Image (cartoon, rainbow, N blue to C red):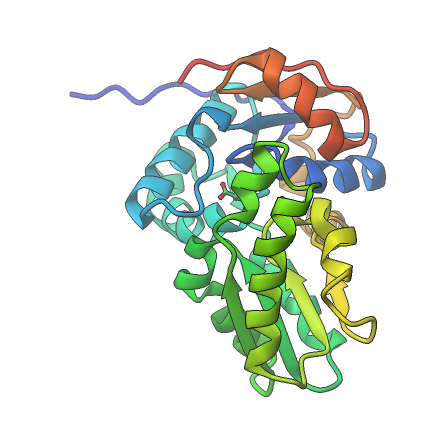
Length: 281
Ligand code: DGL
């Protein structure tokens, strides 16, 4: 008989998960707009990137990390990763949470983004840039059509962008080739696109570069602000979860890789220096 693990029942930090550094662009906005809460960030850098991995692998890795965050006392976990939101969220919510603890919650970043993006477009032609996993899952078109059935969605997978960012190679001439190639391929799909969703939490770091290839009349949608506003609304509507979130304003960072590497890179995504700890898988 497998004994069910007892999870800590008292209040805990809000968990923020990403495959690596990208989720820090989300945490940066959330902690700015909701500074009163405690946050625990976990980057699975040892196994990043997730973008080209199979559905099963992303699901298994994500579930493992969510369980670690529950073990550390989180009652609410945000998958600050589009790839994990696309490939693991539904299974975790529907299959795993009822067994782990039906009172804990896991939220993703795709739904709040799609809800808003459909209201921003005037031409009703929206572009999505994301990892291969996110694009293949079709999560963006499916979710956008739920809220905005009249919007046409065009997607382009950018498999090289996350590796370039994670390897600190995104700010040089070499990266321009891949950025231009994928942006052109997206824009070629429709000349009516007036809104482009940066459907990967790493991509806000490329915003200046992207502007070299994306005309000014096209708006770029980053997720940090959207997810932060979505969380504010969620906590208002769910006092039973809100009361389980510690409010001392503390931030803690964990990585599955060596913390020294994480700490030296993470500042670029978070805008402030970070000292991380190691989490053994
Ligand atoms: N930052 C993640 C996303 O939003 C994942 C990148 C990756 O691991 O490939 O999709």
